[in-house]
Image (cartoon, rainbow, N blue to C red; front, side):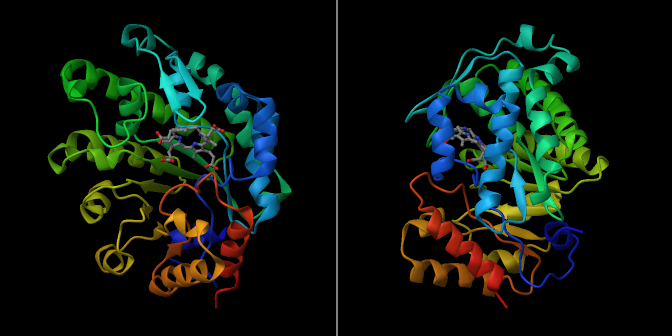
Length: 334
Ligand code: 1CP
């Protein structure tokens, strides 16, 4: 059994397993080389030979315990025929979501639109580098996808006041996103993903009074669905104000904490396996400081099932040597 699966089942491993959010990406020169030649990001995600190669790049360099497929949470709106573009130094820009059109898309058409993603998962999961390791499939949580679908770009600090104005349409879009997110999860598992991560990157934008409707109920539906597929599910409700209630209600197999969470406090509050926490900015400091911070998390979670990771994605300006240094500290921890 892989070290991540062991940790999720509460079994003791000699040291915590590790993977890194956004481990395949812009901080790696070998990724930037491929990206330079492939200016269309969606097309790159749909090129199974390149996307599987990019997925494996960090595993060739570092002793990581999992590969996360090189794709994007916005591949779902894309496969539902919403226009999705990525603008340099700006982020995603989406077109209008046409509910009447998107709700007519068949499961088969959706599968065909994303077939190269599933083929890439299949290629990666069979690679020698992944023996006794995990191939992580992922989705955006319904709330986070709704944010991009309606806001049509990153919301940064808050969402437009008009966001919730058409309540009925929002409900319909949310349900459609849930339906296709389940299909995307199933397709990834059938292709070879043996762990699913659900990213709720914009959970922090909501007030607690909105959690039931937009976070708890939709995510619980996905988590229960993943459990029927017999693969573990890790949830990352970034910036949520109450991780404890989230875990009790949504019941993921493990939870990823963000870097604003106090690790001492959360350990006392949460019984399920924990992942992540380290501020990605620590990788921009020096080795001594990084070591101190990494050891802090290792010490705090030494008697709690723990998967090492960051409190958000690795930053593009990170030096890969610092990532190597981090991975080695975790691997050498006694
Ligand atoms: O190793 C990996 O993790 C690579 C696969 C991966 C994942 C898991 C990518 C590639 N994107 C994601 C998830 C993702 N995409 C999330 C959830 C995690 C998070 O909060 O970071 C979100 C919110 C997105 C949406 C997205 N995709 C943004 C906007 C982020 C924001 O602040 O609004 C951007 C800029 C992207 C593009 C993207 N996706 C992935 C990469 C490597 C890139 C950069 C593309 C480039 O310009 O080269």
